[in-house]
Image (tube, rainbow, N blue to C red; front, side):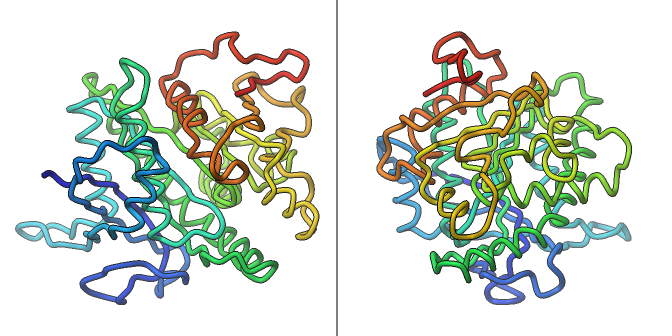
Length: 347
């Protein structure tokens, strides 16, 4: 059977350090925190009939994917080497041009190992390819993985992950700028119909917050539109983040639309509020003041969603992924689920 592939970019430390890399650890790349390695994970298609993305995630966790990490390989003749980023983005560019495929960049959250993040990325890709609405474009998922400790140790692991998320912002910012350059090249081809989206979960939104600062430092003027859709799920950032330029307000400039998914029963974010000394979280009750947000920001309340992990892990719930798939399709939201009293949609 053919391999099922998920591409990735990571600033984690490779294991082992140099050749025949089989995994990535919980520390930064030994070169520097913004040093990225690119590659792809491959799994033989099991030919199984999965019920949902959660089942796919669980299966992948028990069958470690084979990693192919891109290095620098010489071109024929005296040309410069082909960098790992070029190998990944050249492939994505070809898929966008030749097959009209969309690309979803997925940034994971707190308490997640590289292998666990890959498993979630496989689950996302499976749902978007097999359970999306009729006519939805095929979608390739690219995992962006940062060195979360993968531990639930109170206070110490959370603080360590938060520090690592902040230091990772520059690495993600570099990748976003690279994607922007890629889209400029693709835009010259009238036959290209592929789009790029961004999805951040949990503390991955804190990574994005610091990435926006890096992007703004490199492009101090108006930021270019890079993404069709940006989805912020269970966001472990301040509730006013989309109002503040120093936080996530500029992300609206990068996208055609921004969608916030929140859950008032998210125990992890409630704990973040109470025990970590953080203000109200965006992923808990939604934006602090809807009236101050641009019209392109949609808000979806997931509090009533039923799921084996109904709080912080609800991003893999079938109802949520169904809404994600429709959102990536780019159509305006209909009246179904609209709650005018609270100015948001309710799942």
